[in-house]
Amino acid sequence: MSNTLLFLVPTVLVLLVVGVLLWGVVIYNRLVARRQQVAASGAQVDVQLKRRHDLVPNLVETVRGYAVHERGTFEAVTAARGSAVAALGGPREPQAQAEAALGGALSRLLAIGEAYPDLRASATFHALQSELADTEDKIAYARQFLNGSVQGLNTAVQSFPSSVVAGLTGFGPAEYFRAADEDRGPVAVRF
Image (cartoon, rainbow, N blue to C red; front, side):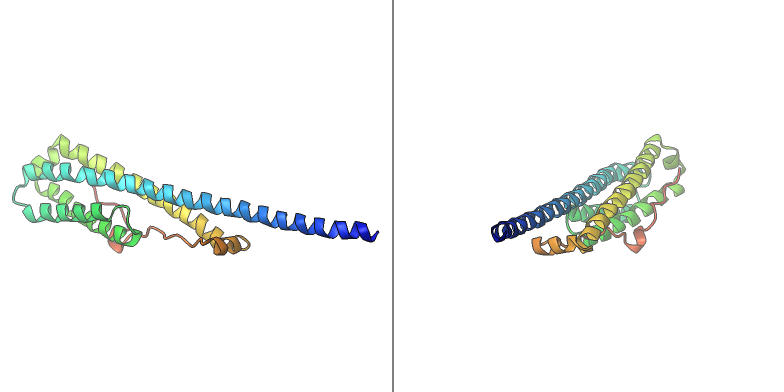
């Protein structure tokens, strides 16, 4: 009986160690999957923001054709777009600030349309406004999806028992995409 016990104890210990290792691998893989989801969601936000950035020059040129003396507004929009493009793909806080500045500049640019009846009647201007409104909706959805992914990762990183594996493997919480105060609502687009 003692020989059986001597054989059984190490076997149980080996099975226990293997079970703990498998448990750690499963949790680690879940954390990796969540981190990849956050990265993919962040890339989707960047795609939508780039789409918005690509619309800006066309919108500026359309408005410029009707309101040439609004040079300060055109320069502000162009500078804000340049800052937003430069911040794309970087840390989320500076990116959110640059996007908020671009949103404010775009609001001022679109407000010019109210002062120029010919511009308001332009089919090109209407098409660009519609495309911009659609893009803003897509940006909002992409940010919401990103923040949902971040919440899932952060919950996993901070919850027991996965927090043990996260701590041992260097996982930390991800950063939410927070809109700046000026960017909490959609850009005022009027049709």
